[in-house]
Length: 89
Image 1 (cartoon, rainbow, N blue to C red):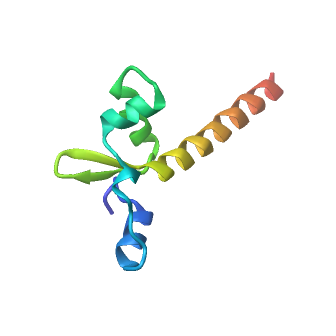
Image 2: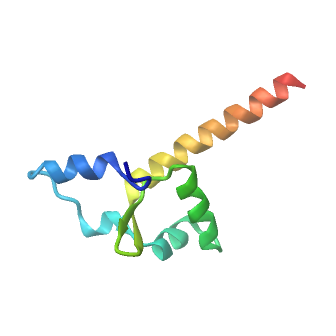
């Protein structure tokens, strides 16, 4: 399985009645702008951590809702790790 595989994209590809708006796809630059970060390297680190991404040719595309869900989940995990590390002290 490709490390850039997105289950949602496959599901949407199989469902003919549901369409993805072009507004839902973001380029790396658009994602950097949306998240108000300065460096694309942060995005590449997120991809290594499991952020859903689609590779089209040599360019990444991100589905906005999937990215938001990923970041929310990542935030919850980071907070949980911080709490657990404080309890262990």
